[in-house]
Length: 202
Image 1 (cartoon, rainbow, N blue to C red):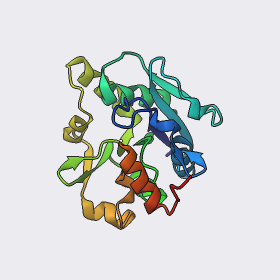
Image 2: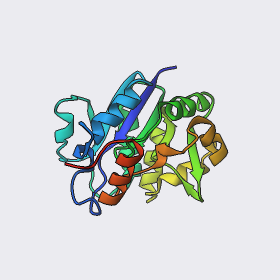
Image 3: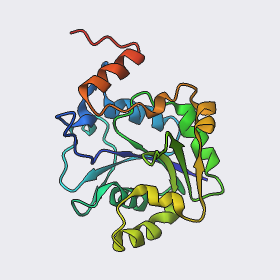
């Protein structure tokens, strides 16, 4: 069974104030760092972006980009576009702002998905839908959900064949749960840099 990774870059970055994928994390961009991590675990890596969105951080990487064909449909539509673009059976899906992502979590969730259509972590009462695994075969189901007006990726967790994994499962793969530390604000970015042991001084 082949595996892909989809890096979601289409979210608006109001709280950060700029394109998160291009933010520096040490001597590389957030996008470059995450692409390197997932690239060591899968057979193909694709980006998912809004229609017309520029991705300067991808100029050096040259990764294929799947585009959400319509504005305003949210991450569920982006997920459908990404799954439609891949050749692999399953995709690990991750946002572009989790630079402490652990390869052990990526491979562990992919392994857990071998006989199900989705594996979605559930932590602190929230479905972690942008650090999860989805089958390409879900594409038609997701498009049907969108046609019904559904916009929430967490709705996939209710589908037959989806597996929800708890905190204990995730801690076995990533003891500090650092894979779920996002960089939605400058303060959160500085926290992630500190956790990675990267100096923020100029």
